[in-house]
Image (cartoon, rainbow, N blue to C red; front, side, top):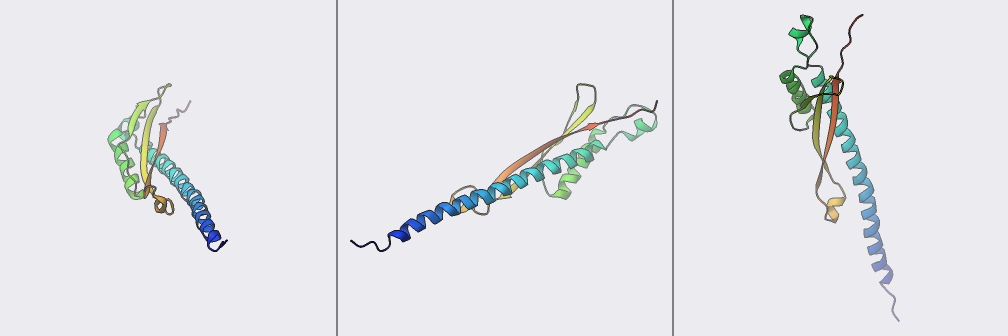
Length: 139
C-alpha cells in the first residue's frame, strides 16, 4: 500500500483551517477597533456639537440653549476632519428637561484575511453617542 502524499493533503486542509482561524482573530480584532473608534468619534462630535450654544441668549442672561444650526455645522466639521460620515445629529429633551444631542458616525473596516475566504471585503460599523447640555447657576 502506497501512503505517499496523504500527509500533504491533511496538512493542506489543516493549514486552510488554521489560516481561517487566524483571519477571524485578526479581522475580528480590527472590527472591534473600528467599532471603538466609531464610538469615540461619535462622542467627540457630540461634544463639539453640544458646545454650540445660543450665545446671544446666554449673554442676555437667558437660559442656555443649543444653537441647532451651529451644532449641526460643528458635528459635520468634526466628522469631515476625522474622515467619517453619518446622518445629521438629532436633538431632544431629556427626562429632567436637559437638552440632548445625539450623533452617529459610520466608518468601514477593510478585511485583510477574511475576504480571501469569501467574506465581504469591508465591514461597516456605526458608533452613536449622546451629549447633554449641562448648565450651572451661581447661588
